[in-house]
Structures are given as structure tokens and as C-alpha cells.
Image (cartoon, rainbow, N blue to C red):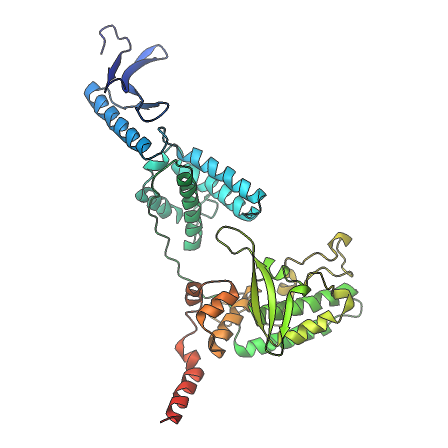
Length: 420
């Protein structure tokens, strides 16, 4: 250090590294700083060596130089990007995808909120390439004791941790695509034990169908015409899920009368729009529904006020008490009517120890369970028809044990025995 307590500047490594001290508020900061340039890259890096020792500062600066040179040689920028910069660029990119209809607004909102509330407090200030698998695993361990919004102690599920994982991986993949990093850390997904979701027994399913008929007929004479119309549509809505396994919500809302094909008396082919793609794209898929659905569709189709050839199947009827602008628009949710109906029918809870409340999604589960138990359809075909994967079916419906296949298994055995 200079005897006069003045800043120093030393050039090493063929001028590519300059070590220097500087005055801070009129006082000499004894920590050596470094400016680094490389022969292969543009610009320069400024770092603190975090050392008062010139020899140690020199060693650290040379290490940074070699690392920087190696980055440049692989096509990466000289200056490493920090987490917050990469995350901001990722959010901007997602916003562009929303505008192009290649990402849903809800997905964008979830990613943005997760980054702001959960990930930024953990990783801000860190260079992206220096975040290792161990750092992400440490975050996942801490995340278990946070709420969904990271604001208090309330353990989250493995599903939430895995959604965070998707956001983290999205940032790294985007950064690699932009040549900001070379490698993506290996991240293990949290172990996800699928909880059994409430469904119906075969006997309860018959009670459900009978209750739906009674629900339509049980309209008070003082009720407006809209009550019966909505109930007619609701019954068809429930039976369509029951006979086809289509997801409630946007998938059901996408069904159009023009997209129905009744193939003899064998099955009903429905064209559904789904956004369940990894890239967020909307995609059409054909769904084979059981032939029992045909008569119910024809019944509603015969009601002129509820049917329009080029329209959606489940729309707000002309009798609606809502704003007239809703007429003809798809009904996104029947949740309120479901809650009222299922309580009225006495089928609100599954008869298990945990008394799980049934939802419209329970009808989709009932469809899969009945197909697994009562048909010879392959898992591949069932997954394709349901817009899901074989793995998901195996995980969710592991409770459909071999004793429920006893009838089919015994039929195979009897058929083989008859040939002996």
C-alpha cells in the first residue's frame, strides 16, 4: 500500500487485469478492486476481490479472468447476468407470448407472482451461472414451510414446490436460449404422492343420474323460465363429463353443436379445445363419449331456445336474468349450481373417513374409474381420450385395485378354462 495512503493501480496479465484501490467518501478503501478484459470478448468486468492482500487479490482476479475467458470462448457474454435481470427478461418474454396467444394470462400471472414473492427474495443479487443445484434444493427445503404466497409459515404441497420448479427451470431455459448461461442446474422434482380425489360408487352414480332428472323437474311454478333452462343445461353438462371424461371449465365451455358426430349407435365424437399443453398452446382433440350421451344431446337440441347450430352447447340462455350481453356466451362454470344440487341430492361427501367434498371434477374421476373397471380399453387409449398421460392415470387411480378387476379377470380365466 502507498505510504501516503493514496489509491494504487497495478496492471497485470498482459494488461487484461487492472488491480486498484479507491477512495470512498474521502477515505481509502483497503480492499483491492479489479477491472478485467479479455482478448475474445467485448466490454469489461468490474469486481471486488474482497481481499486486502495484494497477492490474494491477484490470485482471485486471475481466476475471474480465466473464468470470463472460458465463458467468452463458449459464446457466452463476458459479463455474467444476475438472477433479477434474467427473471425480468423471462417475464417480458412471457408477456410477449400472452400477446401472441401462446401463453395463458393465468400462467403468466402465476409465474410473475412466484418470481416476485418467492424466488427474488431468495436469489436476487446472485449471478445466474453461480446458482447450483444445492442452492435450489435449499430453497425447496425452506419453501415447504411457507404458504403459497410465501407470506407465513404454512406447509405447501409437493405440487406447489413443483410449480415453483417449473418457474425456476423456465428462467434458466430462457437464459440458455439467449446465450446468457451455458448449463442448467439439475433439479429433482418434489416427490408427489397423489391423494385420492372424491368420486362415486357405481350405486351412487345411478342415484346421481336419477337426482339430475328430478332436479330438472323439481322447479317451483313461481320460478322464472331461466331456472329450468339452466338446470336442463346443467344436467347435460354433468352427463357429458360422466360419459366422456372432459374437464369441467374451459374444455366443456369449448364444446359446439357443430363439433358433434354421432357414429351410428356406437359412440358420440366430441371436438374439444384444450390448453393443457406444456407450451400453453390451445389444441383441438377428439373425445369419444359413450353412446348413452346421444339421447341427452338430442333432447336439448330439440329445445329451440337452447340450441343454435353454429353456437356453443353450454351458453347462457335467452331467458337469463343476467345482463343481456351474456346471452349466447359460453358458461365457464356451473360450480354454484353444482354446490346447490349435490347438497340437495345428499351426495355432497364421499363416504370415507375424511368426508371429502365432491366437485364437478369428481365426475371426471368417475369416468376414468368406470372405464378402468368396466372396459378393456388400453391405458394409452384412455389417456389419449382424456387428454392426459398414462403416468398420471396410474398415479391417480392406483386405488382401483385388482379386486375391482375380479369380474374381468374371472371372465378371462373362465374363457381359457372352457378351451381346455
